Structure formats: structure tokens, C-alpha cells
Amino acid sequence: MTDWHVAHLGGIAQRGPGMMMIEATAVVPEGRITPQDVGLWKDSQIEPMRRVIEFVHSQNQKIGVQIAHAGRKASTVAPWVSSTVVATEKVGGWPENVKAPSDIPFADSFPKPKAMTEGEIEEFKAAWGAAVKRAIAAGADFIEIHNAHGYLLSSFLSPAANKRTDKYGGSFENRTRLPLEIAQLTRDAVGPQVPVFLRVSATDWLEESLPEESWRVEDSVRFAEALVAQGAVDLIDISSGGVHAAQKVKSGPGFQAPFAVAVKKAVGDKLVVATVGAITNGKQANRLLEEEGLDVALVGRGFQKDTATVWTFAQHLNAEISMANQIRWGFTRRGGTPYIDPSVYKSSIFD
Image (cartoon, rainbow, N blue to C red; front, side, top):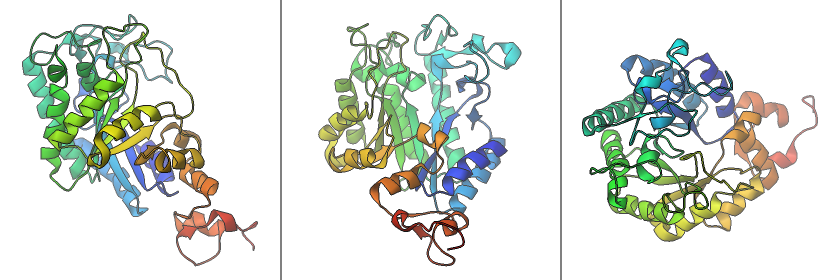
């Protein structure tokens, strides 16, 4: 992690989000999405992450780390660098060392992966556990397992990407085996007190293009029930898509919320359920919680545009929030509390 992360995540932390998450963090070098990605595959990466986490904690905010392996979507070029996809060795990529459940590329423009052997799966599991422990050593308040969007664990779930014939492929139980093993491994690594989240793509969005070979909402419900039975995960984060290039996504405001509602109805209070995607205002977020019965509304891209997204949402709901005093006082008064009431902003710093 770099000074950019301190500035970017620090600016968000100063404005009262309550909870934040560090981007997809690779457990091995070849598990990065791009050569520029954050990683925790060696101890020297702990201190740069700790610097970011300690600043966030200084603002009385919580922050977790999303642990990940890119699978067959690895060795790609950062999207702001080039319109091409594959990161060649010339630009720091590893297109000949991309790993996946099966040797099927995400799309023709992506690197062709090599199917992981069972030995390589065991090595991956060991690397995962070590990365989780490094995140905790850096001060992370929680861990999220990135099990979505067509990355490694997500690819094991989907029959559109997983064509294995061993214990990690074929049946639902076999395809969910590795994600469940990773969930338990993560819990064992962090102990009973640290929350563990898991993100899942509720559907591959392939019902129209590959109806016989896809992961569907009913599979995610069944998977969530398996997580409940296992007891290793505290929160399931419901996203969708990213598994196959033939997907037909039907987007719109809060378009993934119905998937989260389906999961919540199945698991009840046995698992915290979060929704994410196209949540753009406070009233919408509040409705998802109070009317739809969901537990958490997660926002990502909104903070790229507006680092004070939570503050903006609070204005929509006339709710008080806490933020850095150095920012708050200019809208309220000298002294006072760290809380800001959006309904009583002063018009000038001289008021």
C-alpha cells in the first residue's frame, strides 16, 4: 500500500463512514488482478497496510481487508492504463501462470489459465491463511473473503467455469467445497472475536445465454444455508455477476437487493446479510434496511465520487453523524461535540 491509499482511504475515514474495507488484497503474486494490486503474501507488506489502518483507527472508524485471489481474471492491465486486457511480462504480468479451477479463459481476450492441481489448491489454502494472519497483524478489524465476480473462489462455485471431475468439481457439494474450506480456514486464523464476511455473486446472469450451466440465486440461498450450518462466517455480502463474459446483467437502482432479500428470508437472524450495488442515496439505503429487512447497505463507487457519501446520506435522512473535528467545526461551531446535525448547518464560518 502507498501514500495514495493513506490519502484516499484517510479522506473517507475523516468523514464518518463507520466501517470501511481495503480493496481486493492478493494472497500470492499470481493472485493479483493487475500488477498494481495490493497484496499480503509476505511480511514486508504488513507495515504499509498498518500505516493506513492506524490512520483510519485514529478517526474512530473500523476497517477490514478483503482477501482475494483473482483466478482466471489475473494478469490483466489496470483499466485506467490501457484498453487492452492482458498484462504481459513486459508490463509486470504473468499470463503464463494464471490459475483457475479449469483451463477455460474468462473470455478470448483474457489469459488462458491452467487448471489447479489438488496440490496447488493446498498451497493456495496455506497462502490464504498466512495472508489473513498478516491482515490481522496489520490491525484489520474484520476480514472479507472475496468469493464473487468470477475470481478464483467464485469460479469454483459456478459450473460455467468449473469443469473439474475431482472432489472440487461436479456436484453442488463439490463446487462449494473450497469456498467452505476457506471460510473455516479464515475463522480458524482470526479466532472467535474477529468478524468474517464473505462476498458472493448471487447469480452468474447466464439464465438466458447458458441456462444449463450457471450459478443462480437458489444456489446462493443454498450456499448461505451451508455457511449458517458451518458457523464460520458472520456476514454474507450479496453481489452478482462477473463469472462469464456471456452474462446479461439487468442493472438499475438497487438491482442486487432482491437477491439479498431472498438470502435473508432463508437465513433469518442466523447470518447478517448485506446488499450492494447502485445504492445512491440515503432514503434508498434506509428503505432497504427498514422495509426490505436487510441488515447492511454497502456502497463502493459512491465514495469515489463523494468521499463524504455517508454525510450526504445523513442529510437525506436528517440524521446526525460523527466526523473529524477539523472538518465538522466549519459547519457547526467552535467546541461542541464531534457530531454534526445536517439540519442546523451555519451559513458561514464567521457565524
